[in-house]
Image 1 (cartoon, helix red, strand yellow):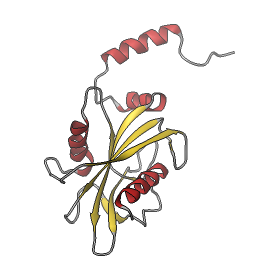
Image 2 (tube, helix red, strand yellow; image 1 turned 45 degrees about the horizontal axis):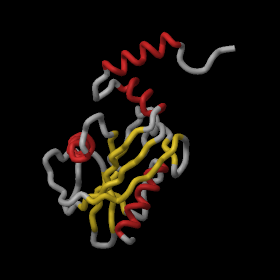
Image 3 (cartoon, helix red, strand yellow; image 1 turned 90 degrees about the vertical axis):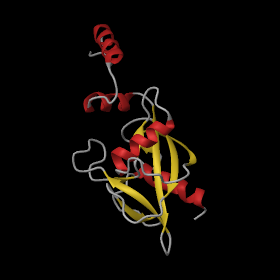
Image 4 (cartoon, one colour; image 1 turned 60 degrees about the vertical axis):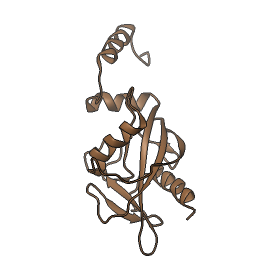
Amino acid sequence: MKKKGLLESEAVLLGKLLAKAKFPLPRPAFDGWVENLPHVAFELAVVRLSHTDWEVFMTNRGPKDKFWPNMWNEPGTIIRQNETTAEAYRRLLKSEVFCEGKDFGKLHFVGVRDLLKGDGRNHCRRGHELAHLYMVEYRGEALEGGKFFPINNLPRHTIPHHRTLVAMVKKFLKV
């Protein structure tokens, strides 16, 4: 009968590799990490008020994404070791919203959502995630890297737990 888990020699090697690892991790190492250890995510709702209703900025993960191919989500990132919230925010703006140096104004803390590993509205397929949700209001037109959608009419292929995060934003905005 095959034993589940690591052999002692594998555990020693993994410990040495983890001590050597620096962020950003190569994709296979990152995927293995987030699938097996709880992680803290910085999720960002970029909202704007159109002439009729609130809209939320969403990005598409593309066809090669391991966990959610071609699915829509709010921009987000994993907070790295010794990285502040402000640093994660600036990195996220640069990597997913393509607005490095752009000032959106006040960053509002919306709340924390505990997303357990699994599928569904309150689960994260990739792994156990503590999602720290923030919101900024944008007063411009288009942003690179994604698209604005009416907050009450998200794209059909939205990641389920991101629907939960948008619901938190709606409650925060009282809509």
